[in-house]
Image (cartoon, rainbow, N blue to C red; front, side):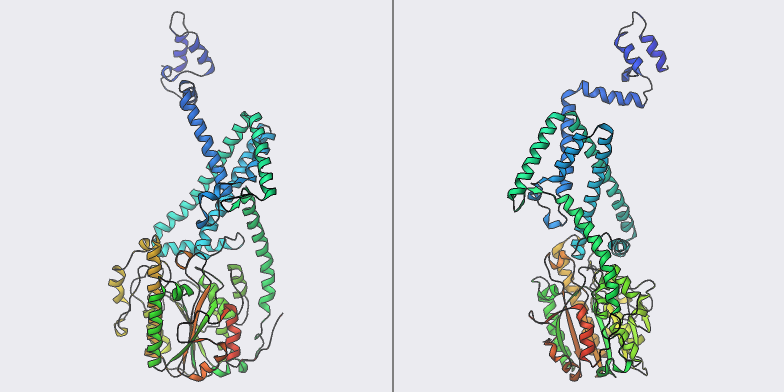
Length: 598
């Protein structure tokens, strides 16, 4: 029966309820049992009348939602930007932004107040987002998020998750991140609108409260009062946004300065005949071991196994006639972005962000590898098992040819992000490049990947004659740890990281024992430290670097560097910035400076 008909019948004289129900019918406020097919308006009315029918529950709900809104707003304003700092005492502060926000809301009429509340909520969303990004970047790269530079890294992060945990997880993570931001925005806006309405409904008391809070804040700030080691009067939210704004501006200024810097080169105009004369006739190999950092050599969990490997390898190389010297370089990156470490070492420029990397690789600044090519005395090749798409940087590096993940004939399984075990990559390098007869000596640029996080599953060393096409690693990969198990366990991550470095160092030094000649010169180093969860929250950015050769004259050239004998650098061995290595190496082996640009 239509709603209208029911209302008319209920208003007939003699029918119970003819007064109040008829009045409600005229207002459209019919109760649920009077409506055969309730519409949206009647549902809303039913919810509204619920507060009248259950006043205590309604009041409790009102107070709870208001308290939650306050907790959300205060939590967003006081949230630190690093995971270790997320402690309860960090939230025992009075945020200036909350006091100012309350004063603004109290001063505005209804509609402007609503707009201000929405904008305030969106501001809290932005603050929460950059704090979460800071947490992630500090955890994995040892630095905060940079809005001017780091958006380009997000696709790389998704590709890493896809290679490590699968495409489904990567897609779910990307969608989840977007949904999380939208959810935070919705919740924050709802919270600020809720609080603004509460302030308006209780304007006299809210005004007194805001005045009192402001007075306390000013007093604590003026007197420098602290609680739990931090100031009671906080401006954490505004400070965080200010830092990000300053970081963005400084990054834009830095880009212009770096363009000028990259055009100045100590050896930019050095004639080919005056480059590296003391290495002529030598097969020179520059090798980066992924995530090989100082922590691997000194951390109490990882170091015992890694140090045994370095000592054993030093003795084995000595038995084969090789000698080594080792020191430390301070990497331009931390936890990831390996290409920044590679390019810094080879260019002699401090390349610590993606924009600098793009700037320098688009130019013609002389790299150490290109110096070999420029002489015309060497063939130059790159071995890049981690490269799975076009890599235009090969021209900037001065490589005649590169061998990527698809050029090395590997038919075995991937080991998480790593496309193939280091031992196989080195054997393929020997078969396809290093072991072939040629008219010129060879300069090789080799990037090893088995020690890339998440360090699960890990390959194991097999007989060199058993490597074949890599299928021998099928059973090893299947029996290894799952990446998800290692990622969630800090202790296991550190243990497996140490084993990965042992594997990579063993593979490289065994390859040198097996295939090195009197004219082989090997330079190998780490690109960066592992992530903070493995290396520690306050770890240095240092990485080991070693030079290995049979010809003692080669090592005599670097005697003035005061590096440690063997593959393990002493704790107090010299530490240089990674960007200093190119010029020191060129100078040590007879290159004559002829500056360009400036």
